Length: 124
Image 1: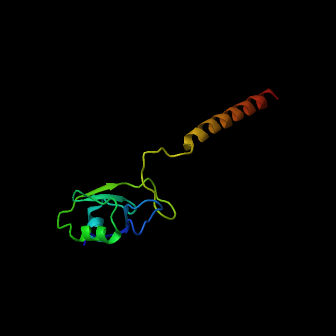
Image 2: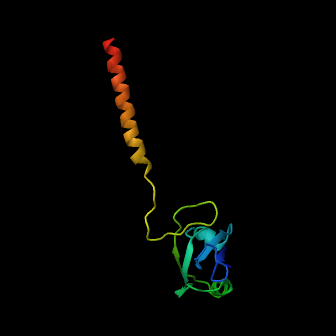
Image 3: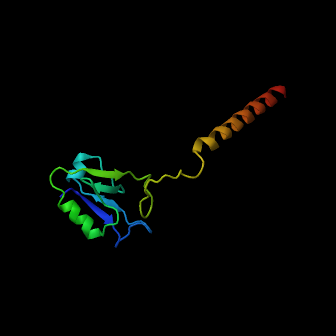
């Protein structure tokens, strides 16, 4: 085998409203593990040029079983690990503020407060 398990399909959606095929597990010492490029949570878009869109789970499994010795996968890397179903990369930007946007002004205020305190103590 290729050394990994998949989840998903039109009949077994892994993520709500998404019938894509995802890597659920990479088997230790299997082909995918030894190659090192595939990761758990990756969305598999195509196998040997065959699109996996709108396939039932068992049909996707058959494509992998009949893929042959040299296998080409088109994948989409997950954004980040999460609890529960893994995320998939989309065109939208991630929400929230970068940590530096909060830390830099906070550190600048703390440094200014220390400087003022030291100047105040010198005058007394």
